[in-house]
Length: 103
Image 1: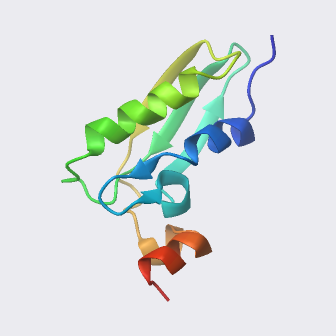
Image 2: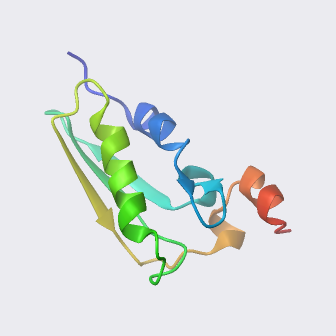
């Protein structure tokens, strides 16, 4: 059994969309970091577009479920972080900026 890479984990997170703005969490830059240890334990550090996001719990659960579907994952923890604050101008991919009309 092989342990998934950061890139493989990021791939399974790409389809997860913020329901309010219909853009993926990876393209929005909401996934700050992914750590994988030698035992297959995964920690995903993520943020939300705003601390008051009504879909925050749902997004965290969706990220957790997506990661735990990967072969070789022994444990998943999703940590919500607020530092640095999310900034769409700095953190969104070009695709997300196009979709949101940011330029």
